[in-house]
Length: 203
Image 1 (cartoon, one colour):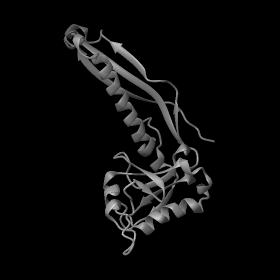
Image 2 (cartoon, rainbow, N blue to C red):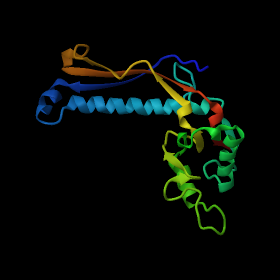
Image 3 (cartoon, rainbow, N blue to C red):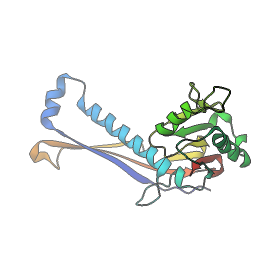
Image 4 (tube, rainbow, N blue to C red):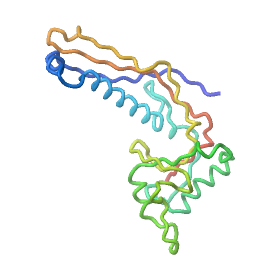
């Protein structure tokens, strides 16, 4: 059983009425504003889905859930043996019986860069992270919203939405100054359905 409840994430922007008038001959500035707010909200949702701590009406993300860990000497520069240890941990959890296409590695660019230049051993000439951006055949996703190297079956990380992207245009609150307010809101929560399907590195 995974219990979730709506948490609201929002974005806010302002435009002057003059800009809207001047922009009539170019691509719709309102479309640009809405697109930017939608991307900001998507980024915030991804951030909390990974690192949310559950406080102040925010979701409890993956890294603060009861997922498995693998100790590394330096989690920013894992060795091949330590990477294999992450995979083996999931094997020990019996999570590798899930469909292979559910699995992916995620990590920040610093970790990815270090693995690109770290050899697996002294003789093969192969690196922990190969040029095809895969480790052990699983794709590697690089994002600065990740805090450490993690392997997981990401269909087991659930995002629940109670609404689409709700948009509100308010020309009244700052109407005396000729300013129009734009708001975007979305209700969402995060739940980890199978914590044993994830393993992160730790120091």
